Length: 307
Image 1 (cartoon, rainbow, N blue to C red):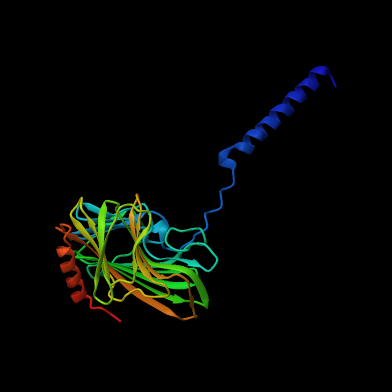
Image 2 (cartoon, rainbow, N blue to C red; image 1 turned 60 degrees about the horizontal axis):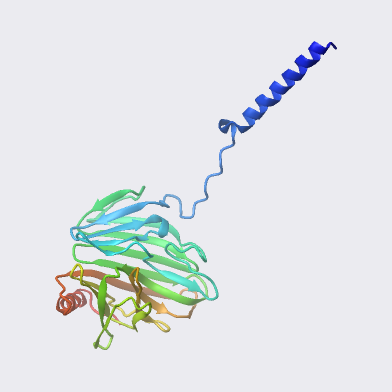
């Protein structure tokens, strides 16, 4: 073999190796990535927002947070913030949080969503839309840990109706169950509550970093002096379990309202819970609570107290 031929063969080898390396890193030649595994059932969008709107109320629903409320508006006033979770969360005994956007213990799995606008069923195939009507009903079937859950939201011109039914799928034990949560703004300055025996209690909200109210209640309201609104939450059936209570977490970032069903409780397979809260923004509240008390009385007449 002549020296010239040897050099030529070596050069061809280098070119061959270089071309193979180019093909090896060519993005068009890479294998397609495995699709991300779905959490929700097929057909249920897993991300984005679907906005429900009536004449007075607007609420976006957050698909990624278990199809729960993201924030709340009364006309042009945002009275529910998006810096925390809404809906139902629980903490199994000795474990971490489940429900809504929580991932610490495990995810809420959404199986089915149904939307009815002014009596007509509207398929939910995607997010990023706004649906308007006079009466909008949203129904969600999901599983949170060992509980089957059906959550219903009904939006009208006069209030926001939230109902959550739960059924234990097996014997289980909780450390804590927050049945409903609402992220009201830190601009509220005081609260008022009616207890199940009919007595009225009141108190300030001053970013104390503590829990206010801390009793079973029929209804609780906060006063937003900035927008002259009473932020009213009425429960036709008192949410009473083991060490149950209404709480307002009096923080700088929000005055978050919790309805706690229990602070540790065991459940037998098939045991059921079914509670409702009605949320209403009361305009023209001046701080004397007259408008809010009148609105509470009207809700109690429309949705009578249940035992």
